[in-house]
Length: 487
Image (cartoon, rainbow, N blue to C red; front, side, top):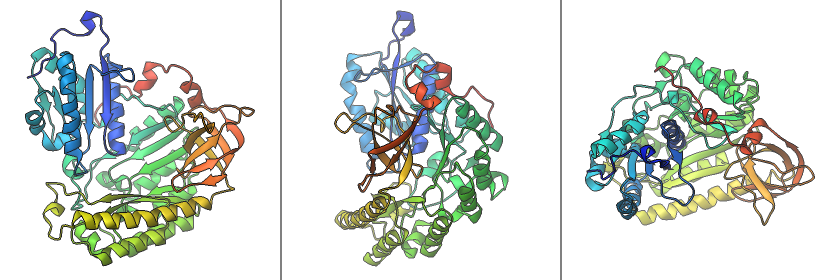
């Protein structure tokens, strides 16, 4: 039973504050932008730093084994806070909410609202209903009714934006619970995607990242296997759009026309995040990943042939059930051959509801940990060597929020190169102090395993996005998209 006061905060002359805490992938980050947009459209304001909000929203992930413990631990920490502030409301959404549903209220009865991945637009209504009824509310829909990009959005950065082109996934990887929580793939209409991008560019956005659980399968719903490559080329025709990225593709659907479109479209960045998961054919088969080592390395070779400067990153799972030392060595072999600019490496996480959770041959934690450390050492050495090869080159760096905070000791700001490498750039006051959204051209003077340093600044290009970082942004711009009809 909720203990929230039935008297609206606005009626008492008190501004209702909110905070959204996000866990998981870029799709969750983008969903949190929508949750923030919805709450601000409903009259809430962001809680000041260090202050507990009147409404705390947890946007959860269910991919890792410790996701449950992390959520319930954080919820427990809020019990005394809520007891001291009876008007406080707590909401839990995202993949873990879709998975656990009513179990969340059983374990944490002080939660006021539980909502799923298919109904984030219901959050303001559910909060109001919980407040008035003095009772916790739960709404979990099993299928998408309105494409989430029709919802208002509050972006953290004026210069960059996520754009969803699809939601859901048709794959059946044995380690993954996401398709069960996000549903089957639903593709957005091309015209709606391009209209959103045009609107974002009009607001000053320089960079968009196209999102999908399996982004290069885009078009499967309307039967066009080359739809993703065509979409990339269409993005290349949008004046003012300087950088286009996408994630995450699946090797099974990565076709030659996409590689050609990447190479021939000037604003598509020379960057590719291509999940490997394992280099062993037998493990890939057990994972139900519909490619093998030869196919994967063949894609890498084609990408490098078309775009020699491309930075390629990947995801790898260590310790999948049945993985032998020989299987693990095959993964190491692929890492050496592919020479990734970065590898996001994870210990296999047993997730209830997935076929892999009940497979024989579960690997002891100490074995997984040993393999993980060995693989990370190899991957880091390669990434460092690849970064060292860039010393002396000139890069255009898009200065970033968060990453772009000025470092008082080194007098540097940070941002991303075209290939998405993190670059710390010196501040040359004679040229000017860059703002988030501005573009700095500088020479790389030092390389570390996970970043570059560019202390020789050549030029600074100020942008409209940089202007926005110095000014309060109009709420209509923050909210982004107006309400739209379901697609």
